[in-house]
Length: 116
Length: 112
Image (tube, rainbow over all chains, first blue to last red; front, side, top):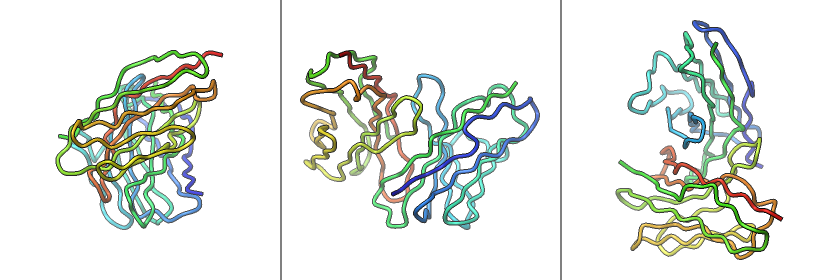
């Protein structure tokens, strides 16, 4: 149980284009989903917290107009990197928290974004 | 703000050796503490957690005790196996629907 999927697993795009990453909770409902970014040999950094049906809450320093987050249902959240540039190349990871909360987050396998 | 510090790797051990990975934290209030493991090519998996002082989390032979007095949550295992080779992340949550604050991760390599 508590499986989270992400799609795509890898994406390569040209500078200036937009990329959408999907995060799905497959066997549970997630009222809250989180988006993290991981640089090589670095820790995961929280980008934003997404609650179903409401606007995402972004961490300080994360541009909300560049990283668009939509949490339209209890099983799906999307992250769109708009007008991507090479410095946006990174590993993006989502996690989902069950409706019961209790802090535990279940993580997706991550999406490797490379912007040329 | 909240922060997590864990020992940097890589940590290389022989099979059946005793493992300790140190983790200390800084947080206001009473956070929940977690260890996550990331096997090669896979996503993060919850290994164990503790939600209050003196709680001990355990799973798959791994243990960690929430020590409020030393603000620590060290990960231990009595006898490691090659299959334990992975990256281990210590993390905390301030509670509720807050995101996690992670340490930098410790790469563990177990040699046969």
